[in-house]
Image 1 (cartoon, one colour):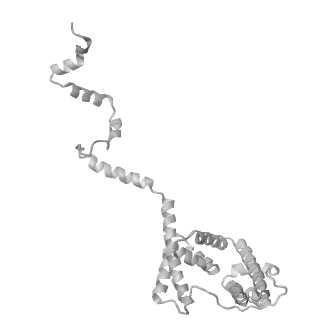
Image 2: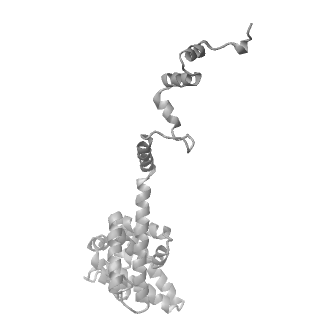
Image 3: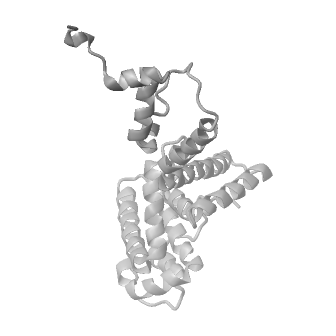
Length: 259
């Protein structure tokens, strides 16, 4: 009697009698039992030298493209574009500031680059160049930082300028706060004999007063806060001129973009 190890599988014997190998029988059973979707889960796990059906060559690139698009973050892409535009704009401004420091004027090429940088910036962030330049006028050090790729402080200053531009009451608060700070600083510098610092601070106050001529909305809001700005009596002048008259400062021209 044959041992159990010698007993043959009836299915295997039937298949062999019909000329079908046992391996082929297994493949046939897998095809019937395992769904097509499940078998496709192993796509891509074949050895590199194994022949792949021709349809895979067209389907695989489409899958990879879909996966790549799904992985992309639109917000991250927008932030990257805005940062790139901020740096380019800062470099254009920095080049003009550098020329001004050397006593010169911006060249036509520098003006053209600034205008193009502004256009690109506005495209990815409306009023971006406007708000950035407002921040740079208050703190020129930010220009050099942003031009060198250190953008964190410049971004925070830009966001603040955006808030000030879109919220009139906050803009008024900011103006009063900065005016008082400069006024106290100038008095302290004068008492300490720091005439160079004193003149620079007074020049900044003159720039602030003059800026009201270009900002009638802010001027209107501040008209009710004259006492906060140190204006003790009415002179009949416009607010900017009244500020300069009350504090004995000139409405000079400070550091600007130069165009």
